[in-house]
Length: 270
Ligand SMILES: C[S@@+](CC[C@H](N)C(=O)[O-])C[C@H]1O[C@@H](n2cnc3c(N)ncnc32)[C@H](O)[C@@H]1O
Image 1 (cartoon, helix red, strand yellow):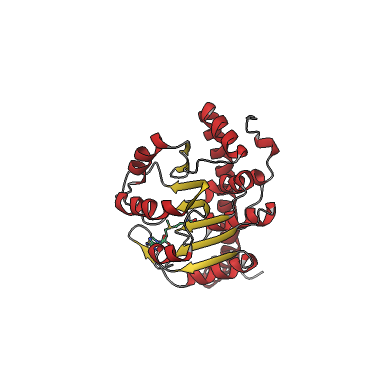
Image 2 (cartoon, rainbow, N blue to C red; image 1 turned 90 degrees about the vertical axis):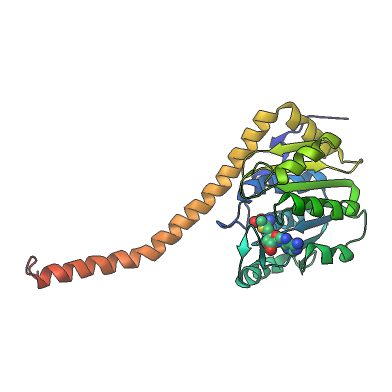
């Protein structure tokens, strides 16, 4: 029986994310990622494009906290692409250290998306997140090559659905695909498209999509405020770090000024 989605019944929506990064454009979608795992209870999750792991670790944390029992795969060369630019091996090492806690059900596949195709059986993936290179050609290719991997319960997430600059073309593919499948598009955090490609979706997912589409602006407002809360945590943590680094410098500066004033005779020794 179809029921309205009730956010107050979710634990994951308000969970405290353990992996955020000021480098990532994904922070604001973490509440939805964790909710989706709770609603869908996927058996296999694949992410194409992981970088520092904000989106991927949100899936993993929710899998652990909900006991969803999914097998998870993060695919990335961890070398960067035309939009992220190249980056160093420290990004992978840092993620690997954090990811250790998820090793019983998750693997970091350091390879290209095409190479990873051989590792994943057809019709097995319940949740696929496409977040590699964002040109129209690249994202369309990722979609076409991975679509046969999707299960009857399959959902594909596309990041950056509202970005139209720097050669981003996800918005174009999103427009082409949405007439064929149930979907919802979040417009905050560069946009996140949810496309239900499988014909046999869990009831909780159907309820979510129906409620979201029937109340689109309230749903967008709710998720964007939850996203802003997550982003604010990063800014606060950053300010704390700045204060920690600047405090000793301030003391040194004050002492230097005092010394200069003493030397120039403007100040007497007390
Ligand atoms: C936008 S970042 C991913 C952001 C990440 N989802 C997050 O939560 O912040 C895109 C990543 O995709 C990877 N990438 C792009 N094309 C790829 C390909 N064909 N094979 C493997 N990795 C690729 C890049 O190395 C880069 O780390």
